[in-house]
Structures are given as structure tokens and as C-alpha cells.
Image 1 (cartoon, rainbow, N blue to C red):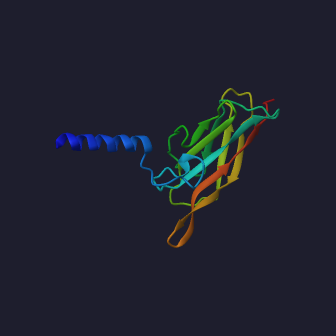
Image 2 (cartoon, one colour):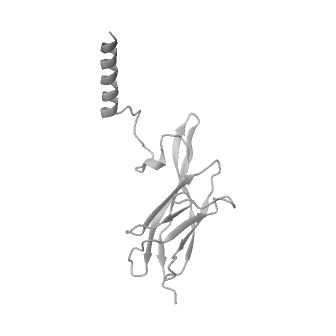
Image 3 (cartoon, rainbow, N blue to C red):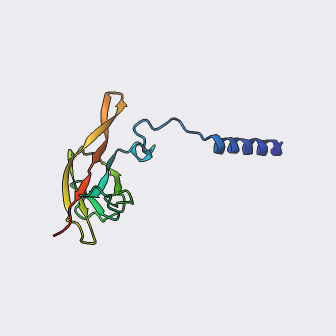
Length: 151
């Protein structure tokens, strides 16, 4: 009898691992961090950094301000990012309870070849359905930089 329950348990575990037990799909957006399954709203800042010749710049430090605490430490992908080979970056942080309308995003070249650039970008919000209607949820920002050579 114990062996029968043991085998049944193994079959259930195997079936769950093969087919999963997901309750649904992420309908907020294509990126998994937008919903994350935890119901916590996020602020997502993404974009590209290129030079004036339209070439992507890798290794550029991009940071977000205006939503950070004064003593908040730098945390990679939470309040700053480094651009990849295509010049792209993504910063994902919890939005909190506030609904900011704008953030400051700064691109800095640590090698000193390009001038630092500061952008003030508007935040747009997606929404979720609640019992009282639709409410803003994730804050979304696109900040694309074109860096100029230092003189």
C-alpha cells in the first residue's frame, strides 16, 4: 500500500515538473519582470546609448534619479545599469506607493571619451483591473541617449 502511494506521488511530481502548474500568463507585457507574479508595481527604465554616428556604446553607466532615497546605495539593474554590446540597458525597481510623473536618467562614460548626458523623461503607466475599475500599475520609461565626444 505504501509503495502504491509512493509511486502515485512520484507520478504527480513528475507531471508537475514536466507541465508546470501555472495559473495563467503574464498579460501586462512581454518582459517577465513587469508582472513577476508578486503583484508589486515596478518602475522600468530602458533604452539605448549611441554616439552621434549612430553606433551603440557598450559599458556606459546609466543611472536613474528622482525616485531614489538620498542614502540609497547603487545596485546594478535596480538604480543603475551598464549598457550591453547593442548599447541597450534596463533598470527595474519597485515603484512603491507613489505615482511619479518624471524621472532623471543620466548616462556617463567612465572612460571619459563622451560627454555625460542628462534626460528628464516622462513616466507612462500600464494598468490592472481591480474591483473598482482600472488602476495605474507599472511605470514605464524609455530613455534613449546620443552621446557626444568630449572636446
